[in-house]
Image (cartoon, rainbow, N blue to C red; front, side, top):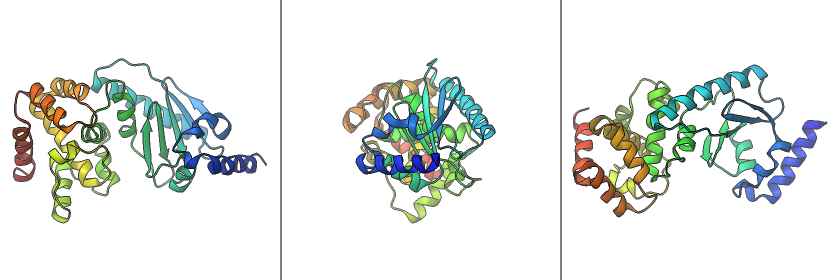
Length: 260
């Protein structure tokens, strides 16, 4: 009976929530979900979705990711992060109004979690923790999240898109054989990115900046960039790295497309 009541509440709530994009569903999270907590996380699931052991293992994994990402960003922040797990993509969309398998905003992470779909613990958490420093342009924001999921998650992004043994740059070369090549300058002007080519280019560029110029300069860049002003962002690049943006982009392209 309780499950039928829960379904009824969800259906009513969906009708009046505009498919959740206004995030009103968050206000009713305690009545819609059951929850369990750890040091930094509140895990919300539908009753019967996951066993207690699975929930415990999930939280332990996320706590480890929390420590690694905080170490990368060199911050000692004590966030309380809400994670909402859904059995399927349609169920997630119907309540939250968000497409895709994962979504991170404010101090919330929303994911699909079942036997065939289990997102890596790093990508969305990198957004949430990173936003305590700044919200950089999509290229740097998503590039950093993919870079960290590759670094700490044993090529997690590569496995997600079907290239489990390949590096980001190897995948990038394969994608560019079939898709129109983007440029870093173009990506820097995007407010959002959503295709695999853009993700790979962004992560490749982030990795290049860290390897060539060091993490400290990259973190300075991450904290300094505005969200959408491409011209201003290029000026910030040039101030921090003491080199023209076009030169940075050309050197990245040379190492990526010629060296590989």
